Length: 153
Image 1 (tube, helix red, strand yellow):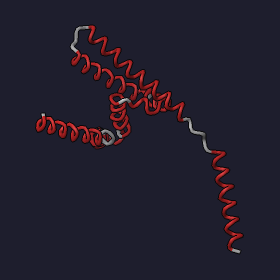
Image 2 (tube, helix red, strand yellow; image 1 turned 90 degrees about the vertical axis):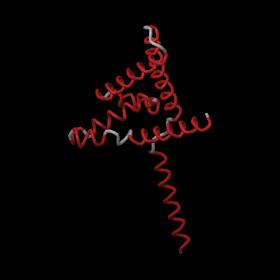
Image 3 (cartoon, one colour; image 1 turned 120 degrees about the vertical axis):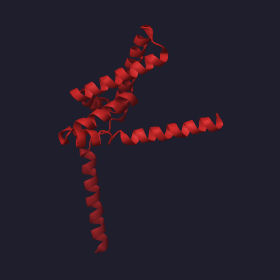
Image 4 (cartoon, one colour; image 1 turned 180 degrees about the vertical axis):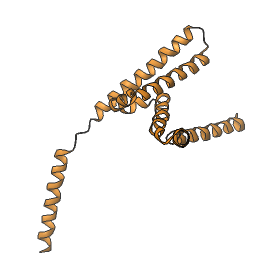
């Protein structure tokens, strides 16, 4: 009697699994990887074009790099505020989180999310809820690298 019940449960479980396999969306890993690569590459290419523009205007490589970072952060923040960066992120996936633009997007998106709670307790208190761990990790790594350079440098 127990084996009949066990066989019935196995059959039901297999039928359920077959139904789940038929209805779940098929993964599009290759397509997602290609989109991420293309969009991430385009963002990096835009950064290089901006850097070349500043270099051609007489800025040193360091100053051109700083100006490029400012422009990319501004553009990412602007596009996040306009809602365009979310559209890009849905299409490009990981390609849209190239470090500098992705970081700017994370800061602005969390600020926009908590704006309704007020500027002090909403935006001011929670703006770094997403970016805070990244900043802490960056600070710790910078200190460790600095110590290694001082000790072994």
